[in-house]
Image 1: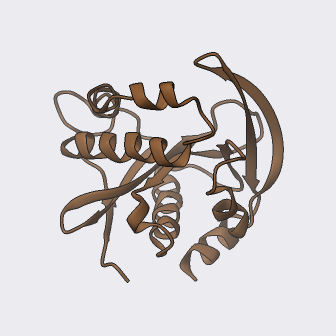
Image 2: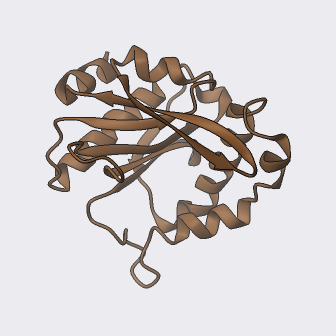
Length: 185
């Protein structure tokens, strides 16, 4: 088992988070999303987006109802998770916005630790967590990760990305204490 540290992200992590984000999209969505779109993903653009999560002056998160957590190995960011209030559907308390790990760090329990830490941080922010959603493109090979942790289908939508029509499935957890327990096992 690889020794990793799970901690809240800082503005200094923005470039590393961007690299994990872009690299993960390129491996996770290869053959699903148009290759031309994946090829044009840019570390610098993603870094700007992740830097915008933090106050320019203080380096603290802009919003106090979201969390951004990283997994590090030998002081290198190898994965991250982010979440907060659900953005689109009434009656859902929280949303797992994104969770990505470098390929070599997958299937070692790090994703479960990240998810458990996200839930803990969202609860600290005062969020009442009875349920949570994640939106996934079902052809991606990581769909099973969420289902193994008890996620069930909630709804589906189609959307356009770079001229391509894709389906997105919202998976829902209705028992957050059970989810945390599964993440710990």
